[in-house]
Length: 250
Ligand code: BT5
Image (cartoon, rainbow, N blue to C red):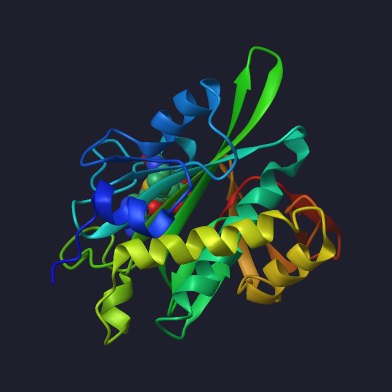
């Protein structure tokens, strides 16, 4: 049986959850941004079979070839923009939990990567949405490689796909439903210390010596902890602590 995604299959598995499905889009985050402006509720999800202009952070590209990946964007209405980083943590934990139903070797890398045996299997992009001065909420974009082949590509060393590590074939609709269920559960715990504890527990970065690119600087030190806003606390070689909110662990 081919692993098909279409309206009927998604309707059956997502039941009452509002969703939009597209065979091809530029980016599911763009559609979700428009939909939240039009009143879409928390939990509404945009799913695409293929993205032509999928994006990562800092205008980087995200590769989503057809029938081989999950590309979806979930709407989360929020009053307080301060919780944006916690939404990203909730999404990362939700994906990690779902992937553990298929394989071992799942960890998180600060701030937004889900790794499988040390390679990126999923990336998460949380974007805030405003209507003028009014904060409406967040769009959580989740890109997950199910059977994308990275051999002979520039990502071969850094990216991997779930089916390379599992002997079951993956039904993407089931995996989508599982991630969304886990996400609902963690979003209900957004303000709780449990969320932070679960994120810390999954984070491979803690305790490691890390080099982090922050803008065009590189900061090297030991990753000590995560604070309530998801910032990474680094102990520099001279013993001084530095808090990093945006950066890239190399
Ligand atoms: C991310 O950015 O990891 C966030 C990716 C979010 C993608 C989803 S798909 C649904 C929704 N719609 C969108 O348009 N986006 C979201 P970042 O940490 O900046 O990582 C981007 C980098 O990952 C790229 O510069 C590549 O090096 C690498 N990359 C690109 N495609 C990849 C893939 N399919 N698997 C693994 N790594 C990839």
